[in-house]
Length: 305
Image (cartoon, rainbow, N blue to C red; front, side, top):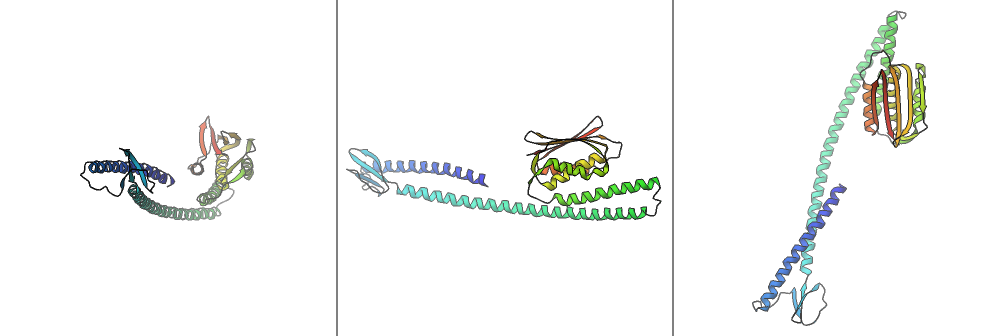
């Protein structure tokens, strides 16, 4: 809006300048024509805005036009000023009306878009809640069914382990999706401490972490950061042989986090965790990338300081 107002003001200056030059040229032609008719006797009396005097005069809005045959020719520029002011005010009023109209149109379009976006968000939340409810019921039902089986059977143990992982992923995903849409103020945090906190929460997995961490701070949405770090390290632990390398360094005006692990022979999931990381990274203008090289999975996260 400010840019539009600036350009309208610039256009106004140009238009008013052209109009001023136009009416000055027209007024000059009119004065020359009337003086010529008066000198030739075709015009008995000059109009009130043209005055011929044998001496200089000082009168408001009277401007010396020229000196001819010892006579001073004065013209009254009040008419020009009146025309210029009238044109300028008319132009300003029209542009104000145009600006208000554009603002109202933009507001109406934005409001309509916002309402549609809110409706879509509400619909997606409803679908998510419905799916979550159904999936939660399914997990609960399977847990009840497992209670009727022999807990010492190897297949039952594997099923319980798989059910535990599914329930953990389900709870984490539900909490994550509930927090993504919330807008929070950014604050300074120690990224090294956040990384160590996530690793400590995974201590029961008994994984071997090779750490190379610099003590650096960043200004971020702490909730988004913790979601991303949680997904990165959960995936590294879940789909590796629990030997994970972690590097945290200052780089290119920001902070670079690199996590790599050997890919274990385990079935992969749908990749939803990576999608969540990519979404949050894009939302916060972070740079996230991943690659696989020689059976090693690597992820990189760059956050501007």
